[in-house]
Length: 289
Image 1 (cartoon, rainbow, N blue to C red):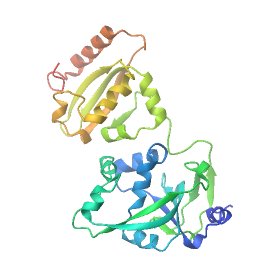
Image 2: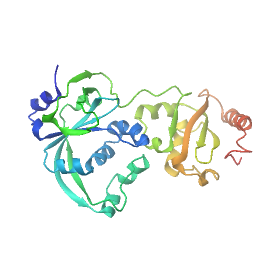
Image 3: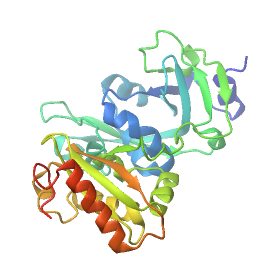
Image 4: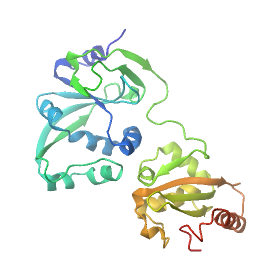
C-alpha cells in the first residue's frame, strides 16, 4: 500500500524534517467550520496553523515543512496541504490578539489564549503546490496512538486509504428542512451553499439559544435568503429591535418554508405573518411587528 511518506520523497521533501499534523479542534463549533476554511477562507486556515501550542511550536523551529491534515473521523486524516516553514516572530498576549485572523477565528469558535499564557511564536508558512489537487480528497490512516495529533513524518507510517473525486471538506448542502446554521457559520459557508441560498426565498426562523426565544422573517428580495442572512452575519441583528438585545453567537438560523420564486411580495409577507401567529413569536418571541 502506498504510504504518504513516499509522496513526500517524490517531491524531494525529507520525511525526517517534515511534520505531519492532524487538526481536530476541541472546540465543537470550530471543528465544524474548519474544513470549510481550507476551501473557502484559505487566509484563515493559514492563520490557524501559524500559531501552535508549545510542543508543536518547538518542533516547528526545527522542521522544514508541514503536511497538514484534518481529522474527519477517528484514526484517519484527510490531506489539507503542504507548507514550507519560514521565520517566526515572538508574540506577547497583545501581539497574539492583534495577529491577523485571530479575532475572526475566535468568532468561529476558536478558544484563543488567556493573558496568563506565556508568549507564543507566529510562523511564516508558505503554501506549496505539492499535491494541491488532492486537498480534501486524499485520506490516510493515522498511526497509533491516535491521540498524538502531530509527529515527524519519518517516525510514522501513513498508508493512503482513499483518493476521492470530490472534496470531503465541503459536503453537499443539507435538505432545506434540515439546514440549521449558527451565526458564526454564516461567515464561512461554502460557496455552493451560498449559491443555493441565493436562489431560495421563503420564511425563516432565527432562534436565540440563550433567551430561548425566536424571530420569524421572510426573504424575497436581492439574493433571497442568502441576502437576508448575510445582513445578520454583518451586524448580528439585521436592524431588528429585539435581536439587538441578543448575543449573536447564540443565534441559530433555519428555514420554515420555501416558496415559489414567483411568489409576489404581498403573499410572502402574508405567509410570514401566518407563521408568526402559529408560533406566537409576537407574544412570546422576538417579533415586535
